[in-house]
Length: 218
View: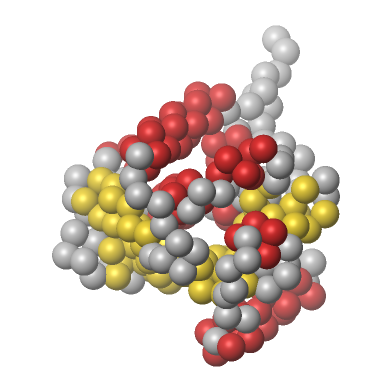
């Protein structure tokens, strides 16, 4: 019989920033605003797209936000997102953060421009800390805001708050926009809004230094 085991295998490796965007590991949940585990087979990808569509419908009629605003999006820890410890699996936290960025992009009024101009929103690095579990069936909140931006990168601070409004997960995520393999400056993505430079934050300076150390190994 013909071997079909690779039928749903992942796409060839592509590298951007700190993250391997192609292989089927844990870090692929950071890529292209579409986590690579869901690129591995069509049913999972369909499920992911359905989740994004439902989220977009929920957020579409909500009030617009400004680039300096913080956006909270509520979710529930359903069983399919949980592991054998009966709390949300650590890889799923990255997916929920991604959904939070989708909502942020829509509520900011950027999503139409992104699709119209065929701009790719990519993630180039993540620093994440897991502090508390998210128990099954409990509600939780993904909080998203932009910390800083420079001509190449924009830096998100994302936090997941548990049902008691305690920070369960905290992450700094740097993203970029590309079109035709060229970087789109953050100013073109966010308009004339001015953000702090990443160098103004001790935390972001440490993040960038760590990123450079990783890049030296690639």
